[in-house]
Image (cartoon, rainbow, N blue to C red):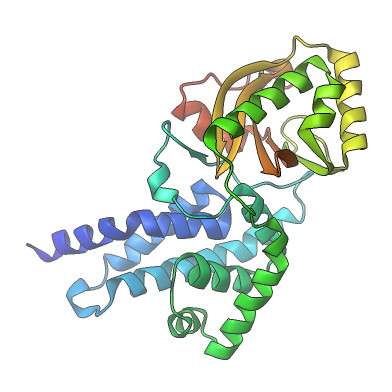
Length: 301
């Protein structure tokens, strides 16, 4: 096998893991692809036969590139219009779920936004990707004690967002469809049964389409919001397209007023919805529209 072929084969064997790491670091599939491509360019300039541990080299390079990009991305998010949510990642028969299979959910991805870049990297590398602390320390150019502290702080910060139990697919899809129907028809009785008292709703429009600027906290506020929207727009502005799983959470894709494409993901505990994540930013939904062969946004009304 020629040297270029060896380099390509080794890299392609690790590409899915690198893509998953970059996405978990950045919350953006497009930025993750850029990081993986930059990793490949650096890898193509070295002799793989001289690298004793290709997996470690590739993981280290991807992490450092993602860290550099994450620092600038966090600065951009400070001026982001409204709530920022990670780009929705469909897992299931429509997409390559195996490439992103892990125990992280959209809830955890959102919670990780509270972490510093180094805390996020230490947590992901050690707790999710099973990298030893000595290697994490070398990657982050910190001593192992500091890295252990970073990972420990990260765990404490996101502990509440860890799912206590997995939701069965049938139950998750049932609740997702029930939530859509109750929201569409303004059935406040059904909604009050579906959502937990402390439910939170976050909506990401990115300033491109209408979305709730601030998070909605608590069942009473959510019910009043749904009642007001139903009085104003009625039941005909919503089209259920299909149920999907979005980064480990049950949810659905819908077409909303003005032809706006939307994903809704639901975090469920004890049979009730505790978090609702709505993505409407068309930039974050272009991949899903293409993957499922859906038309794009018709209007921005």
